[in-house]
Image (cartoon, rainbow, N blue to C red; front, side, top):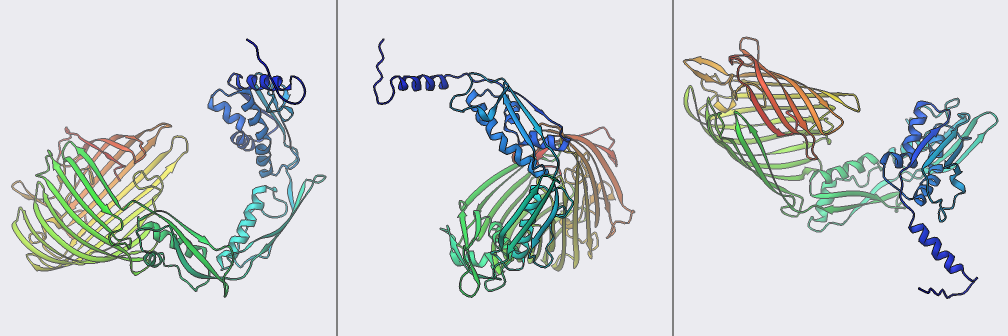
Length: 605
């Protein structure tokens, strides 16, 4: 075979280049052994290891070419230097060798044929301390980082944090265009000090200008402006800007929301804002299920429209069937339609209209009811909401006292505080839901007040294999009607997956004798769980539940208690942990020989 190379330049140069390129492409991939040396503290060593691409490559155990190793090593100089600067080492010496050769001297286009060992040798030198640490002018009540003062370690991150704190302080009082004007940083190597003088330009105090909208297609612009509730004409505030974006996200109509400030102030010291939105698909549906050895199979589904009339109105239709194949009486069902309109009365108060039909075919009572109502919901923050409504309920019930038809006018009032870090698998924070429902009886019952409280708290210890302590308390009370004339579905029972695991569903009530049981007017539920996680997807749970039912209005100890305990498995998934619980009764009427199994998605509470 004859090869002819033609071209201008020195004879043979094209041939050499072709051979070099072929050799480069033919280089074998290989694993890498990396060591980090130097007199380093544990924290500094850990951060250097975390910042090194060479060490990251070694841990990945993936084979790479020599050319890639050279490029990674050369990038490591700057990354390691940034870590050292953050610890105050401004005179450090970094040497990175690849099989004994300094990485910085190797040309990436002509790497060695193989690289098996990389050594990182760091001499950090003296940690610099602030000689002078000044920044100004500062807005009132500005809090600078604790370490930004004379005599403290001169971490580079402290300079950045101090600049951010100063500019944020001015932005908080309306100076939206505050910025770092100048910085003078001088390192004195002879005495290991760093002098830093930073100057801030607050810029003018601004007011919110007009809000414009970009990216919307189906949602009307005027409704987006109304929902955002940006206070045009008032002093600029980053918090108000964040709240406006949060209101739009809360509707569920938009997949993304960005509030963009104009580059330059407008006439009259105003700042125009643009809301750039991307809309979600208008329709959504979902389904769920849970199975229990006693309560049987429960299935649910929903369909939702996110933008019914073009103003981010939401219509949600729910259907649920419970007790299929269970031993809890009969089959329960629920059909509900819920319409919600955000920003109806003001930007944080929305309207809801509700209609539902429900049947509860339980062991101790039967109820079929229809409810129509409307109300308002006040969103105080992402964690706090309040609600008030009016509703009419018509129901037919049957229990140990006989059949009853009643009509009630209800005024449900409630509040929800949700400070959990995640909904289906909380590890920190707390949750509180309180509801008070006064009712007037048009027929079939007496006037009264129904109250419910659900309080949950979470605390997690450890990082690698964290353990979570979860506690729950439930309290219920029915004031007014005597037990014999109270709405049967307003009375309380205990037992089952939502109260006391290990006992049969609604097994504890008020015993009337002769095998007749009805619900109580007071309820107290207590639950505790220890949730232990492994380094993988599996987790283990131990739990203890207790429940109390009394004939009296408030729990006073004259009623009956029962309890249950058990263990469970959790398997983590992207949508929440799959739950498997095995529980046995530990006190109560049960003889202790039975057990219950519960399967579902998400933690028990």
